[in-house]
Length: 493
Image (cartoon, rainbow, N blue to C red; front, side, top):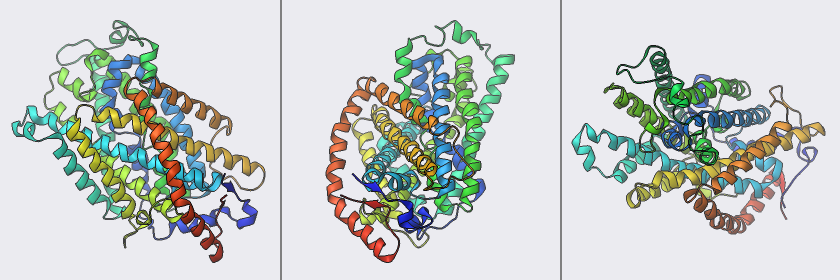
């Protein structure tokens, strides 16, 4: 098993052993962009599209599930924020896993996280294609465009934009996030107004829509719990601020500030939006085929609002796809520099863009285009479950290295920064229990979740085999850095 060397064997500063991971990157992200990336990262496809099907299955209790998942998402971000304050890295939690658990663990976590975002790219491209076809009711020729063609165009355009520069990514994500946040603010203001003063068509609103339609759990407790994987998926991307830290000026100050805003935006945008939706329409009015926000505006006869909201939903999916390509490009670059990913993944452009890793993810997104050709009706749910599993593993790879970091700090081998995660390691343990519970619930989501979990019986053995192919290169690069005076933090069997 890989082991961590004592920090005293490396240098006075353990972070020095990982300086090579940041070579060639530019600190082109500004504080205002980081703030919006942190906010936009937690508002994506899972809320704008996935919430419709979850509401139909779980009923009004969905807002409680979002609150619980949001609480643990906040704890995870606080843990990540402390690690960033200790050592900003574009490799993010994969790099921290490497430092505290060794290269084998980093190899597994990194590839699973890449799988998470690669499948999320398929989800987002699929979602955009579905949203676009919605406009076929207004423009006839759109109905003649196959879903896979739209997905293909989306992937090509977003991959191309990611290859330009980190500054362009930051600016695009800033405006994407601004559109998402602005639209939710408008929806919430309109929704509150309608609850107080009534809708244009006089439809019923308020708490009675919950109490008169079966209460919080109209379909029982188990259906509500089983949708947890969709709720977790909705929060995918909150860890993006960790990856962005390596290209952020004054990251040790900027990232903690961004993390501190998470708790209120989760409460307002996620929990608040879902609660409002349940008080504006019965839960039975929503479906997996349409954004719940579009469903609401259509129901009150505000015809022009639904298309506008649909465009916002497309923006949210494009933002998620954009962020996924950014994140996986950096993670793959970190892994390549340490030998556990192909050399191609470590390629950087003259502007510091890790185009190798980005193109790898773009290739998988292209496979998603094929999925939209073969099974357009099931593409979203299939990849959502795969992504949810990988997200849980990614989150575990934040809380576990943080727990190890705190333990070593107590022994005097590390120094914790001023910005700290509260009540560690207690909060780390309850986070791990929560994540384990989500994995069990995914297993009970028959048939898609059950089959997806079973697919790990194929994925994990493939990763084990892959380790033996990359192990020799990991050895060589570690020894090379030791000879150059940049000591590797791992020892291998």
